[in-house]
Image (cartoon, rainbow, N blue to C red):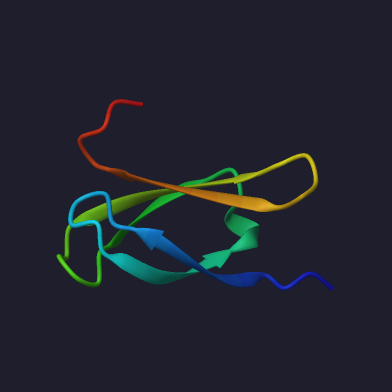
Amino acid sequence: MMELLAEEVVSCPYCGEAIEVLIDHQEAGHQYIEDCQVCCKPIIFRLALDAAGNISVSVHDENEAY
């Protein structure tokens, strides 16, 4: 069985600090907001699955154009 939660390290788009987050593979195709553990600003997380079924995580600040 595939592990549903994976630990990822991302860089905050505001302060640049590396933060560890838990990624839920069932959330692939969705986005959500989680505050940076360092600067407390809201980070937009976008989760996607590639063709091989691996999850990719991208982070954006709330002012970035879509």
